[in-house]
Image (cartoon, rainbow, N blue to C red; front, side, top):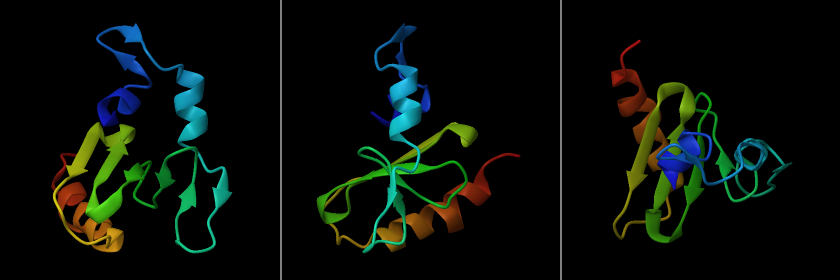
Length: 99
């Protein structure tokens, strides 16, 4: 799912998800009152470049950054501390990317 959205809805040369939907669903639709992030349609909008994320139970996370051609997946049974997971991306992963 992360790769599909990073590639604007195209999978193996076929437009599987309309690009308009990818664009619309990954931009801010409303600002949540509990979390500090904004929300699209099924995607949380992070302040990590052009990134957006799907967040699940127990620390499951898909982070997508089309600008960096990056998809990061966290799996396993951890806590729901998405602040820590997003700090791993901003503090360790993104600084290692080539410029």
